[in-house]
Image (cartoon, rainbow, N blue to C red; front, top):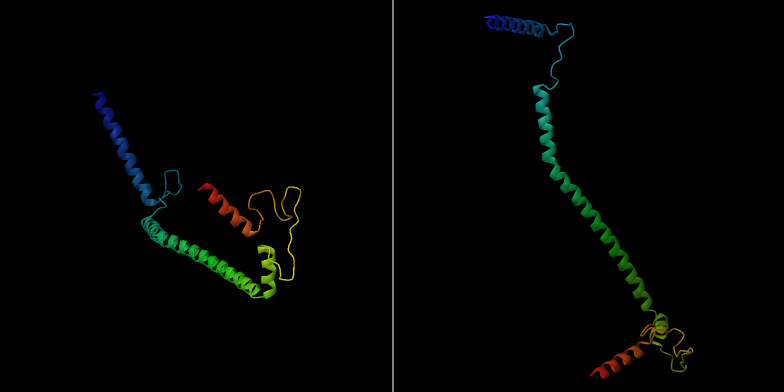
Amino acid sequence: MAADRFSTAARLKAIGEQAQARVYRATGRQPNGHPVRRNKLTGRAALLALTVCALVVALAYPTRQYLAQRSQIADQRRQVQQAQQQVEQLREQKARWSDPDFVKAQARAQLHYVMPEESGYIMLDRHGFGDDQSSDAGANRPWYDNVWDGVNSADAQH
């Protein structure tokens, strides 16, 4: 029977503590006199947090798409600017090529042409190359030398 009394006493003590907690809860105070701390997350705050999370999730994809499109627009603008610069360079080059003096200078430099009243000559170094030629095959050689070397090498193979 001693075990039975102990359980009854323990039960009465627990019921008393529960009643005391209800009284203090109703008054908003703890037994030591300090105010009771309530849970700071109320139903309204939880609903607000849930709404904010839903908005963030709903707006994340469109925002990412917007930023990606802005990046593509910036890339397209850069490409347009580069194309405009290239067009301007080509216009300048076209204007240079429409000048007869420039065409003559290019024919002399690139094709080794000479005017009818002039004599053309090339100075050879001790290895048998011209001033603007090197020992590399085809480097800085007149175009017609490269053509003839190509014809000769093709003929030698067959």
